[in-house]
Image (cartoon, rainbow, N blue to C red):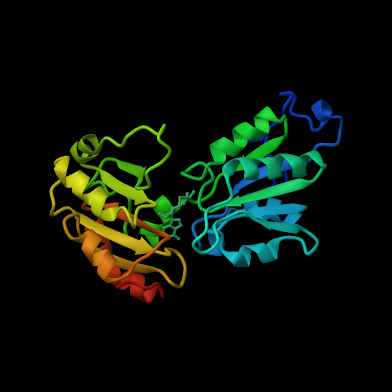
Length: 281
Ligand code: SAH
């Protein structure tokens, strides 16, 4: 059995491909850990992610990170916030990449904490590519994505043999103009579970396009806000009325929408959810 103290050979990326540290950078380079911090509940961070967080000289974190996790950083670690302020824009991605690279070039160990999983709509891929380009050693520590964990805390399994053979995670946020368009008709045809991240404001648009694409308007749907935290709130309905119900309940970001007959399983599990102390509405 492997000790959890041992480093993973498979996740490490050394710029020279040798697997040994610092040769290509004159022995001075630090290292960056791109760490998934989980969806909100601080106990949903991985053991490995926590170990790297505790050892870091510098911690870069954004808005969706549970602030309790920052207490796990060393008391002398620098904490750098790179998320959105209220009503402000996020720090441009290029600037975040520059900070990651420059801190590592000073020989520091950097923990880059990201909500959920770094590679699920988390721009972890962009940061990893920037690190490759700058020849900075790095390691990816996957996290528990909100796409699966948030429905789970609301009692909704993303798959269930009786209801669905697939789940698809999409963004409701209109990306860069270069981003490929969403094929709503194909999603409607697939008939699987659909999980929409970043889409509370766009929910009226998303549901309309799914119905126009052929999805049955009676398909069950739920919006879950601040999932896996004590503030978790769930609103359920159908694809036809979920946008209005979510607006009436004043649900706001961070929230995700799950669409498909698995949502009905959540109703069946409502008793379990209330006894386990999680909020269900
Ligand atoms: N990398 C993240 C997703 C980043 S995109 C992950 O794997 O979870 C940000 C979106 O994730 C939010 O707009 C919201 O749709 C969703 N999200 C993240 N945390 C959430 C939470 N605690 N409750 C509900 N939705 C959440």
